[in-house]
Image (cartoon, rainbow, N blue to C red):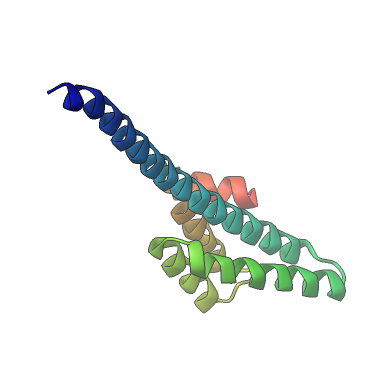
Length: 130
């Protein structure tokens, strides 16, 4: 009985440390995935904005290259809802020069928000102004 009294606390400590390691490792993996996902979304939105405001061909070409890079990362890290919204935006043509393209782009941004979403009209007003 004395042997078990000495061993059981040690076994409990080992099991507790192992569980803590696996739980914190899983949480860190989720955090890293969320960071990569968010960064790809922000980079894509930044590139689309640059392309929309480009005044010289080289700036537009660079912005499209940045968008392609961000889209590739979105394809790996993005949620299925965001990928579907991105596909709809690509279908209408990834240029923000028509009301339908602006609406689909606003839907893409809404999908990126994961949860709390403003109204479509409010989001379009924030993104594009009047």
